[in-house]
Length: 215
Image (cartoon, rainbow, N blue to C red; front, top):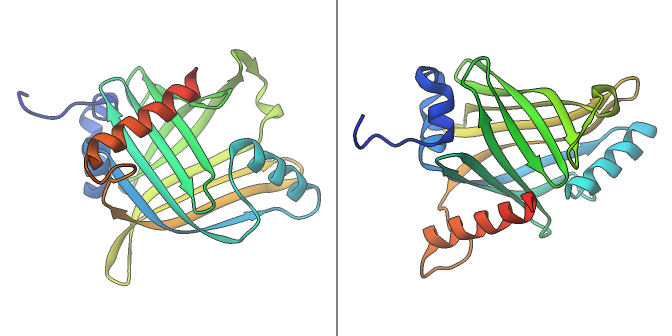
């Protein structure tokens, strides 16, 4: 349809894009920024040791149970760029590229040297990632060598305000849950670098981060 916005997310979901909650549709139609306080925790015993090691590799701080957090999402015709920032300055950057179409297609998420193949399940207006496979530096890895990943996002009403609820958890048999971070975020202005040109600065910052991820 002429004038209707198109990007990787809209095109990948096709008609099923309408199954997302309207606020998630808006976020994945135009991009934007979310912020708030999140909870972080690691397991106990050996699970905690492994969880803290995984967190360090991903750039996730675990020295406090609660932190300020922000994620900027930029959409392009062929990919999504996510820049996650923690209040101590740590960053976690990802580039998502679509393959095929929903429901049989998947996304390729590049985070540092790791590349994950992710399916998507839609439920109640929310979006849940499903890990299908992964590789490191181009070499496929057996699933049992990598923790199980559970990640979702949905819209919840908290004290009469719509919030973007998300959770990301890593677990590994037989150790149990290694690492989890989660929160209920609110939309904020997409200003990441320059007050003079906030929208352009946001896009440029995210794209620079994305180039570092995939280079």
